[in-house]
Image 1 (tube, protein in one colour):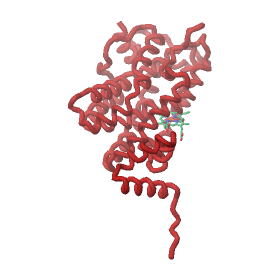
Image 2 (image 1 turned 90 degrees about the vertical axis):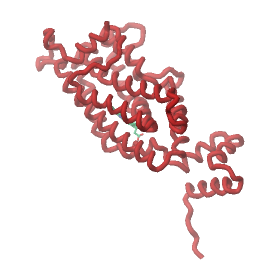
Image 3 (image 1 turned 135 degrees about the vertical axis):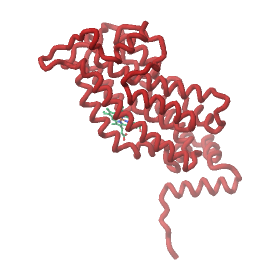
Image 4 (image 1 turned 180 degrees about the vertical axis):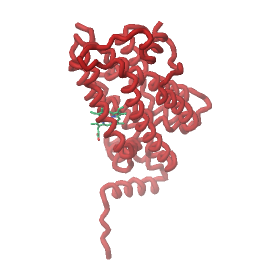
Length: 311
Ligand code: HEM
């Protein structure tokens, strides 16, 4: 007789499946019922039984995340003292991401509210929609303060920002065709703010209120903060629990597509950061340490475009 060593995970899966078979209930409802008796246990069990689609995205994008993270850490000091005296370069760089968040959140809300969205995808997306995570309004408010003008219009104006423009088109078409791909967008564009985002925010804050042009009120860094007493940790936990829960009902094909989209988003992020770097060259310091003062005809195109929108 052989004794087959069972891992804890297989043991839990075995118990839940046996109970669900005997009681003719789905394994998910068995877990839900358990929650009446043992608070928090079902989530623990679910975590043991399921690999979150988010973790799969993380594993598939790890090799892209490392160079992205390094690149940003090299670029960030260029937008801060002592390399520059004003937050213009930071505002300029950040403005590149406003159309991205705008497009993604616009698609998310439209698909969520559209009667033609298949009910299965609608169920996934309703679980993931947490209004406090939305970033477009925050980004817009920060940029208004940073660049000293009001952004009122949409952002779909052509320009030489090839990566940005083609990514916006890609977001629209891919999420329209396959709404479940929005799971990859929410994971990467929101969870990034809780990991690297915390580090970036600390570096930005270290520049001090004088740099940000504020005395008592908050610096224009609301993009990096969340409206909750725990600095957004509660929102992150809620979001991750929802992702974990919906991971149990994804098909193998949906999982593959979501992970592939995650890889696409992360590699586009790298290209976007390169594009920001290239387009913000005129704002960098001269070798003698002076900020460039540009004649009108050399104003960088992105800033020109934004200033048209600020009216
Ligand atoms: C556009 C830039 C970035 C994107 C899109 C991004 C995206 C992500 C995502 C999706 C995660 C997984 C979150 C989770 O599992 O909770 C993550 C984790 C992480 N990121 Fe980033 N990130 C970016 C930049 C950075 C930067 C600049 C740093 C440098 C400090 C950084 C440091 C980290 C760390 C330390 C983790 C946690 C790793 C772990 O728990 O295994 N990220 N990032």
